[in-house]
View 1 (cartoon, rainbow, N blue to C red):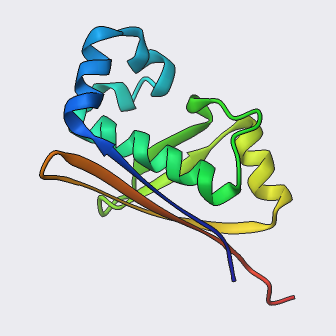
View 2 (cartoon, helix red, strand yellow; view 1 turned 90 degrees about the vertical axis):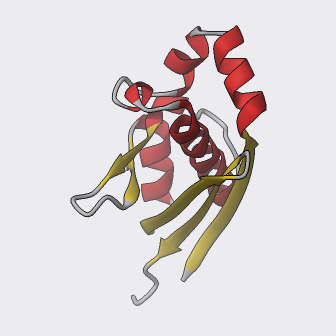
View 3 (spheres, rainbow, N blue to C red; view 1 turned 30 degrees about the vertical axis):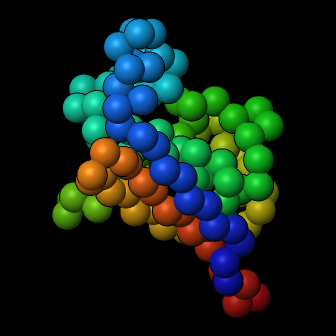
Length: 120
């Protein structure tokens, strides 16, 4: 059963300007491993984190580093959750979080589906 959905779009030029203007933004928004990626990948990850917040219904107590995007062995993105976000997901009974990201034509986008196993 779907527990929540979220989508977000990021303008790549605007995101790049923000990162260039405020270098500490990389540190604030992304984990050490994420920071190694090119800016278009960072924009997609930012969109995914925003989409996850929307899927969960809010950002109370959320820290950016509590949501890390990693690739599995086949290159598919997924979340590794920590602290408040991990606790919130468990408390809601969410069993899986699906995420897809893309960047093209000057925008990065992400879509998240939070799924709950209600099979009792």
